[in-house]
Image (cartoon, rainbow, N blue to C red; front, side, top):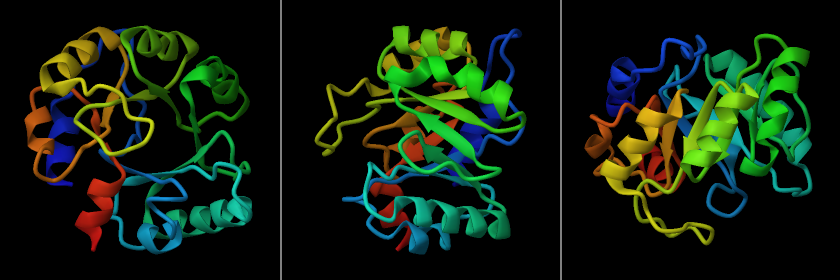
Length: 202
């Protein structure tokens, strides 16, 4: 959390694209396999951080999303729900790269709701910005064991993409407590983590 807050304070954005108030410096990204109990994890997250809940069509995802919303409000956390999960009143939305174009309509229909988009390239970052997303999660920052992970960007390439993005960018993919400080000069808005944060919360 300390590194994530440092990144958030140092992040620089274009004059045309200032970050929306309320973006958390640290985000836990869930999936059914690596984070099977998101309800337990959300109770241990530091205040001021966030969670992206992705149900991937699993049975009971809607019920879990609604319960997460209740806990997030009680604990002062930011919750975003993946596009595949049930809509929950008052929480944000996280879109896969292919659905970036929905960011603007969602923001117009639900004022005040944070919308983030997944991105894996500069072109995807630009599409997210033009679509009206509040932030993008750029991956893969470091080598990752995720089945969907591609070639890691590394700190230098990651920073170069952030400079060209024009909107707040989070580092995702292989981010851990030990390697997160390597991103301090990248301009990233914060850290988005899966297993690295789960291990830190134990």
